[in-house]
Length: 259
Image (cartoon, rainbow, N blue to C red; front, side, top):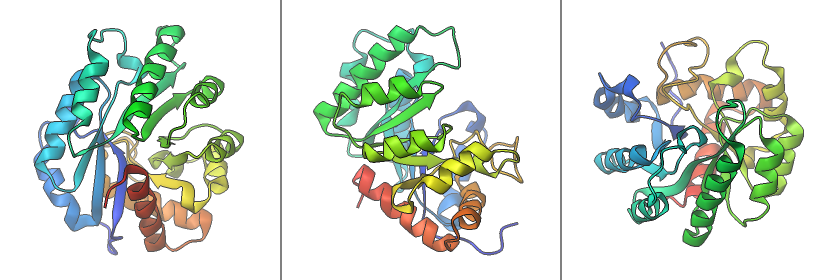
């Protein structure tokens, strides 16, 4: 039970269309504003998911959508996927292109194809002048090299690389976002990265229904669990929890151009 609610929390990355929420999605979403949640970005992973994210965002004033294709979902794209993403991006609730990127953890997905689809979606974001939400896993140098080809704003979500990579991406103008993973034991690398990220370049996220923080690790995550992530950041950065919520909220609204 959380005794002291932190207010004005912005969850910059969620997946509320995931099937894990099928039994109680609306019940959870209706409850979140009373638990301190101000805004949420509901992020798509596939072409179909992009439509679902937009539909959900239209149901709730405080939810916004991002449209894009995750590297795990690139092998069965329609020929018109870029056109479809562009059409969806015209909806007023769509605020970013994502999540897009590279993931070399799974060796079954062709790296050249990943890079092509990534660049195609970055080009779309550039054309639309929209920020990007980047998925990067074990692909740091290729991510950096490709992002250097474009002049974009965006966030590296669920950051898992070291502090030197974080510094490079911050110098390039990107935000860095952390999940409940920072609350896990024996997670020195991410805590070092968190320490290196200036508060004005920090975002927070759940990546729900995944990445539930301690003490809920292994359970279905929702945006109310950002409380534990903020408290961990408070401990690491020695900044009051409410101030962290306020600053990361301001950061997210500036990145995603939300008033």
